Image (cartoon, rainbow, N blue to C red):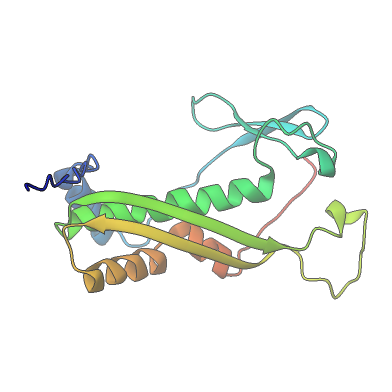
Length: 180
């Protein structure tokens, strides 16, 4: 009896331009004090539905779910933070894979975060000892490519250490919010 063996075909993720990445790295090493100011404009459209504009892109919609008095048309702000973290980690993982000569066939991240929302934007439980914001964030990285498990683990650790968004969540950041 002959056995039919199904081979799993793996699709290679389209890599970024390695030469462009090398040029960016060289530029960063040449001017390590360089700071870029990013800008966004958020406009409340209705209730809790907000449209955020970045560069010349279409509006990015943020809304709240019905149990938080929104219309559930888009992720809420905290979910958007998780999405932003996931995207930033994904970019770093992909860039570092290219820099290390690793061809990726799978790059997926599962994110979840614990947040106490009982203060309800400053109109609920206002205990001054309350810890606001995410208290714990967990990311599971599903990463496959032509590298050993040890190399992939190192890639994940390195990308996490150098992620701008992951570090924004870990580090104290000066934030000023003033009436225009």
